[in-house]
Length: 109
Image (cartoon, rainbow, N blue to C red; front, top):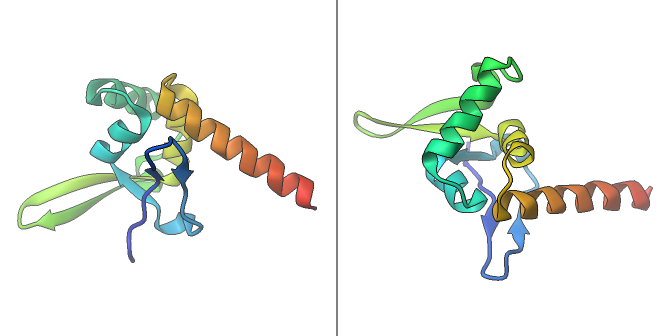
């Protein structure tokens, strides 16, 4: 499985890969994309788990990057939920992109 990520170019345009099954982002990538601090990101993730919105096994995985070093990766459902829970420039851009794509898909029918 090749991991894919959401990227933002210099103009603030988001590039979301078409294969959402392989979309997993690490904390640093989420912090950069959402323009939030790591403690804020942790607090929001912790609150979503506490409220029972997701099971950890459904939206989180740990991968060993090198011997003894593990990274926590978050899946697309968690990333979308984070963007609707956080009020930041990056989160607003991602929400707008998602909504535009949903409306675009609806209009094409």
